[in-house]
Length: 109
Image (tube, rainbow, N blue to C red; front, side):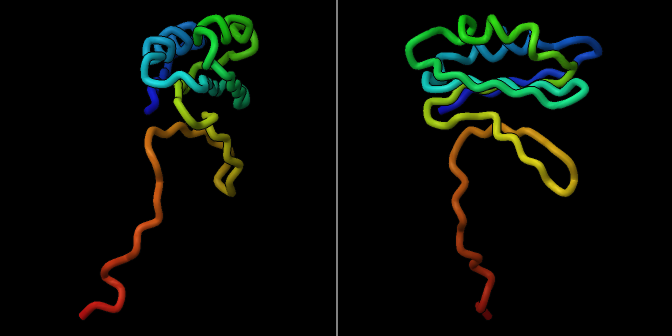
């Protein structure tokens, strides 16, 4: 299970992002991660299995600057995922599994 949180603000959003994501800490105790978009993406992921979320991200306060951000606490996966695509870079967080399912419309009449 994971806990997800996002912020869009007119000013730096890191304080709200850290506290909002930390509020979901009971949903995952493996990894914590934040991604912030300012002039560029900045992303940090920490193992939080033996410590509190806020204590791991306290030192990141000055590094992670931007007005858009997503955060996640996850039991299994290191997130946020950073992707460089032909449309530009983006970060994503997810809660759950993505499985390829067969297409049932194929070959049926």
